[in-house]
Image (cartoon, rainbow, N blue to C red; front, side, top):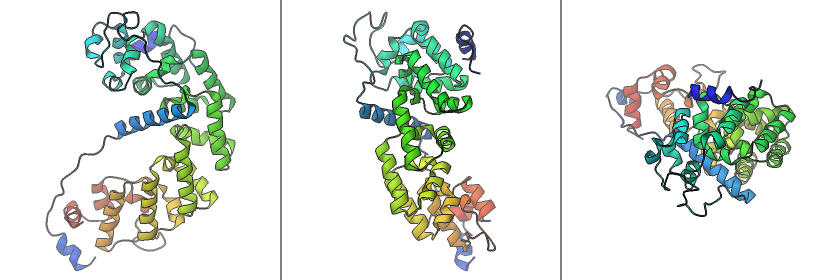
Length: 356
């Protein structure tokens, strides 16, 4: 992959610069069957794709122009339309180059219209300059395959337009490394024109009373949020401020520390806050100090808090003895939590889980 990238870049423009019950319960060994974890990367990719499609619907733009005659040899020379790249890889230099860059073709062929679009591209004519541009902007070589897997439609964009969108960020005093992170972490950012991006940045600046440096920090930390569905952002803003009761300055603090709070489901956010605030009796100040709790799976919080309660060790006040850091409910493995925080063992923990 690196050799291909070097061959692309070197001919281009220069790169930019307790109690008795617990004891009794914990004397027996028990195991809890494990459940397969959801593929976080796949969920992330699906979210990105869904977000971008929503943006395009809002803009009323066409994502991919339909091919008038899919059977035409002029559209797909030496190939027939299909949704399986395997038949073409051996005889298509373009697909071979994409594979060498790390593009996962099996993911592209699952998306409607993308397979035909990619088969119609010539690497030297349609792709080389775009890849060189991405490398110049700062997308790491090892991330190019992932970028193109998520957004092969970047090849539809005019290079002049892409340059204008990067120049816009430079004009807003984004540093080169910040631009590189934005483009890498949100492969769809460059698909949006500067007016759209400017309106989005303005929305966050005005709604949350952000300084220019804070807008840049937010965009760099979570670039996906800037292009996220605004209706969802508004709903979560209302929930955080009106239903959860955080003051405006506290809402701003939450946004800058954990912007992903604005990207999770509103119902999940409401339910999680209710448990943390009503059931666990955590104050707003405690949640501000440990905002990761609002992003932690409900089952993890319930199991770990329940286990501490079972052992008689619920003590989240740092001013008192036997203090348990709230962050321990969100961080680390179960074994680390049980042995290092709860000072117990996995046999006892598994036995406890069987009672839930």
